[in-house]
Image 1 (tube, chains in turn orange, green):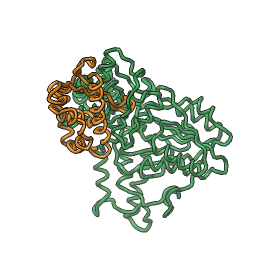
Image 2 (image 1 turned 90 degrees about the vertical axis):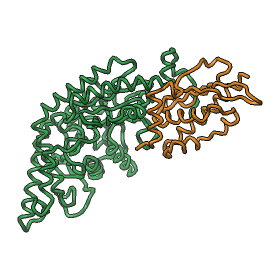
Image 3 (image 1 turned 180 degrees about the vertical axis):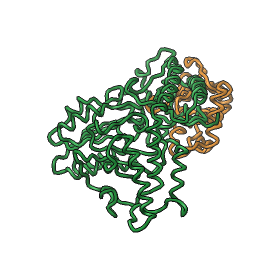
Image 4 (image 1 turned 180 degrees about the horizontal axis):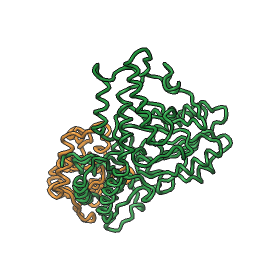
Length: 134
Length: 404
């Protein structure tokens, strides 16, 4: 299967410049960090998304994001794409991001839609974790 | 050195230039284009001469009588013809078939079809190195067993079965023994005058011949009988009808003639490259060789890079053509059934890459690949949450994963 140009670009950028592309991790016990880990090694993909949030106006805003992903090129590209979408958003806005948005942005073929679903799940888990600490 | 580098010789091989030259001579008006079945003119006689010479080359490589070679469209058809043809012919003798869990789909799906027709099939487990134990074959035989079908060289891991020992068991029990040898020609010597094998499948395109042509060996002494699967003009002694594809057959014959001559030299070189490759990566952390280290055909290197998913590694190995046991490269979401049958954990199966070295692989290409593999695995582990956990000393088996 040939990958879309967007997936290849996103994947290669992330691979070659991990720090610039938000690859990394924070201490999950920090109070301003929300961590969401989804997937399973046996299924071939695991995403760990971390959001750094600060209270602002009447909500909380995602000021920075870090992630690590084990998975196929589309899974890694999906995580990386998600990061771009999250920074600067309020938690309410972040919750509105749908897997379709990621799939469309990367031209994912039907067989790779589960990668974008996983990415969407990781946001919800991360927000849930952050809010549980408030 | 030219990019991309082809390291997928177990999937298919390029036709040798000598093969292409021969094939070209059998297509156009000024060439040998006749129908080998035409008895009434020189065009037919000349074409028949070419197909029979090719048949002799195939027979020479595996040391059998050319009359024991039947042309087919490839190893898949040979497997279908051998398995379904023998089972249906001998169905009054019994309805039990023995094969293994790590056969090619052409064998497994033929057996599944026979199950739908009322046959019972036993799918043997290989040992953790991928070898089918002859003793296990012996123990699995019942008074209903009519056919045993096992591969010579496994296409994913390159492990070699002891078909000599298994042939002794089946012959003594009066059971038909079919061997899928699609990967074998040119890699390992085959002597059918010694092996107690009744049916054997061959492919041209795994041995530097063209795609779309293969052959099946059907023993004459003792004589094995088959029910034809394709009916028509009664070609190939009724076993496989259809006009012989002269150019394809000539291509296969030339490929097998070259294989016989070049085999030893080719394999020594290929084996050196393969060992050089493995020696240069085996010191990496959490890297596992899949399949038996000793009973193995030249050129195969199936490796799992733990905590790195195979498809992402393939993508990182830009300009290197390899294949993976990861689910993501196939239409299904299951990782390689072969590696799973060896008892590999799913994540190790997802992390596997098959490098297959062949006739045209150069030392420079292998060196380039080694550097790229080491670099890419390191980069992908930087991206891998599982690698972090491993480094933190977390046992992944103790974690309850939220399945996505």
